[in-house]
Amino acid sequence: EMETGVQIVASDGAVLFSNPAFARVLGRANASDPAPALDDALAGEPAAAEAMFRLTLAARRGEARREDVILDRAPGDAAGERWLRVSVQPHGAPGQRLTRWTVADITEDRTRDGDRIGQLETTLSHYRAMPLGLFVTGLDGQILQANEALFGRLGVKRSSDRAGTLALADF
Image 1: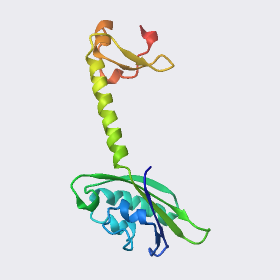
Image 2: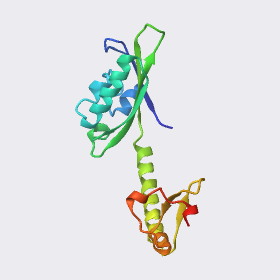
Image 3: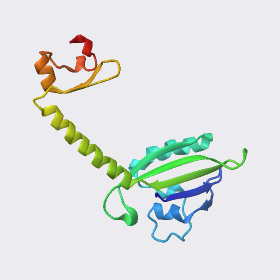
Image 4: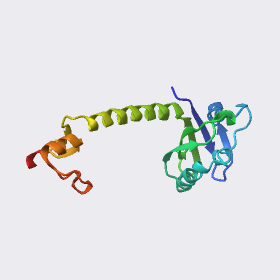
């Protein structure tokens, strides 16, 4: 199960609460030290800047928002990249203007997804190269995907402007 760090921040930016997981997820060596505000913790991470801008804007507006952020460094500044899922939402009773930030390390999920995508791309490239005509259709009979062999056997010139315009009924 993914560990989730939680931080409650007042409207003036003061950190009111951080659970120990918050510091661990951010790669802090000593989780017992007071956790900085999330935007301070991610300062110096260029890839996080745009996401933090959108999240901070949502927080000011009292809106909920979630972003996946890639970091150039791993916990403890070790080599490698890391993915965090950061979310923000209003917290507390109406009028309190508290914000709840959550952060979770999703690096393993992203790595696993990347591996699956790589396997899928390899499988698709094998299908594209087969001497057999293969295709995938939608429920309406529209040809969504086809390999070169199918186009060749049907005598249809494959072009990007025809993608998605052929249907089984055309043949």
